[in-house]
Amino acid sequence: MTGERHAARGGAARGAVTATMSTPAVPARSELTDAALQAQQGDLQARDWLMGEVHDRAFRYARARLHRSPRAGDLSEEVASQVCVAVLSALPKYDDRGLPFEALLYSICSREVAEAYRLMRRHGDVAGEIPHTRTSSDPNGEAGEVAVDVPGAGRLLDQLPDHQRELLTLRVAVGLSAAETGRSLGMSTGAVRVAQHRALVKMRQLMKAQGGARG
Image (cartoon, rainbow, N blue to C red; front, top):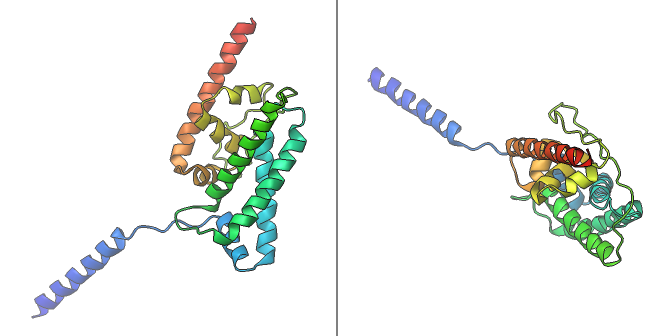
């Protein structure tokens, strides 16, 4: 009888361990997602902080993408304002189940920049100086060599495939971490780092080819 009780307890323990191991880990929500949910509940402080982050990220993204225009600064401010309006409109219906807030923000930024770029092209406004992009702010040091602070960096980014250009824009110009970039683009952190490495290799190849052509 004692042996049967020990066997029963052992089976229950093994079952508990199996159940624990089979339960998928729930990913932690991002700071932006938490702030968005709090803002939905009427937290004005969370809303103000969220909109400050939205404006800052939207402006940096637009500045990097609209660098060809001599009015890049003004256009980027206009885009950032439009993004803020669109985010406020979308906020009441936002549901974080399966969609991090970064992904919603990126989709809105991308749409508003595309519209601004169409207007820019329509008016022939595609000249002007190209600003240097800056190194990603990365306190954990995970960015490695994500630095594109070289003359003509904007032109090099424009020559990359769309997915590589967007990824480096978020990592370098906007200053997102690999995790934040992944949430924006629907990629894992590991996939972001791999794609980032390939994009930087491509940029170095472009720089080398352009250097040879000038020589």
